[in-house]
Length: 193
Picture 1 (cartoon, rainbow, N blue to C red):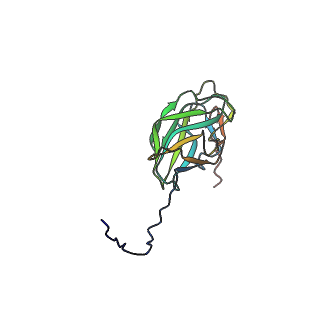
Picture 2 (cartoon, rainbow, N blue to C red):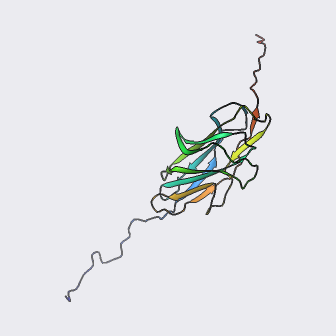
Picture 3 (cartoon, rainbow, N blue to C red):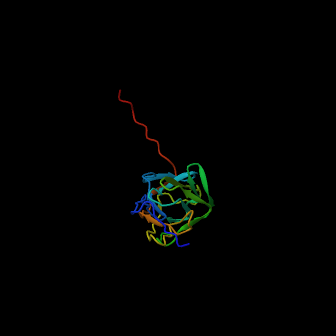
C-alpha cells in the first residue's frame, strides 16, 4: 500500500527470560534397607530402595524399565517393585541368578512410572525368601549399577511430553548386604533390678 508503519514502542523491549531444560532424572540408593539378616521362609522382605528425583527436569519423566543387578545364587523369588503402595508390574518370579555386574533382572514396566517434574518418588523392591533350598549364611545384594548417563541400562526413562531419552544420573550401588539365616534368634537377659 505504500503506507509507512511506525513501530510502537520504537526501541528494543526485553521479555521474560525463557530457560530451556531437558528431561533429566537423578537416581540414588536410599539409606534403608541397611545391611541386615533375613530369615528363610520370609515373604515381602524389603531388599532395595531408591529415590527417583525429577527436581531439575524440564518436563515430567516416564520411566519404562528398571534393571536390577542381583549378587545372588537364586535364593530369592517374586521380586516386586512398589512406588508407595502401588505395585509396578511385572513381578519377576524367577530373577536372574548371577554374581556378575552385567547380568540383571529387568522390569519392563507394563505401566510406566511417571515422575512429575520438580518432584521425587521412592521405588522399593521386595522379595520372598523360600524356606527350602535356601543357603543359610549366604550374603546377597541387589543394586542399580549402570552409570552410563546417555544409555543407562539400569533406568530407562523419557520425557513424557517430548519422548526424548532422559539423561539419567545414577550413583552406582550394589545394595545392602542381606545375610540369609535359617531362623531368627531371641536373646533373653536377666533383669538386674
